[in-house]
Image 1 (tube, rainbow, N blue to C red):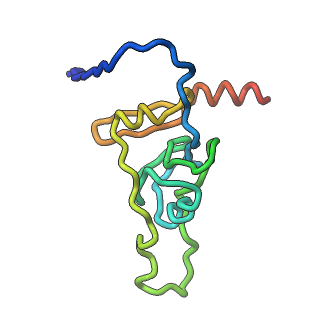
Image 2: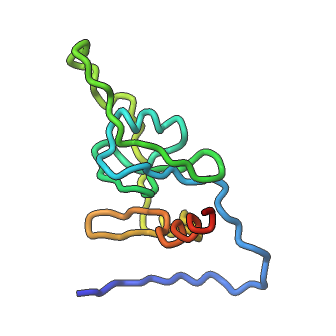
Length: 142
């Protein structure tokens, strides 16, 4: 219980080369808690590359994708299509959903910035905005 294997890799010791480059792209964040719908993901794909599939449970401020520009963007991937009685049977499929990007634990740790966290559970690896930092930033604005 509580055991883990770490595998450090040491390349070389070098003199200081300056600041470490930060990522140039922001993150796509979930607007609300819920289950991601194909309709919401298809709409969000225009903003960047997705890290989740349809029917993935997500929560507020969870990182759901990589923004194509700098800065973070909050999107509602839980929204569903308005239901009408003028719908054909084969119209509601996942045909427009691009497959998600698979991130390993190492890739997640490399991707996150100072105000983001990696959440590791037995079934998944997720990234999120640090709620403590978001709360502090919200207090400063008021």
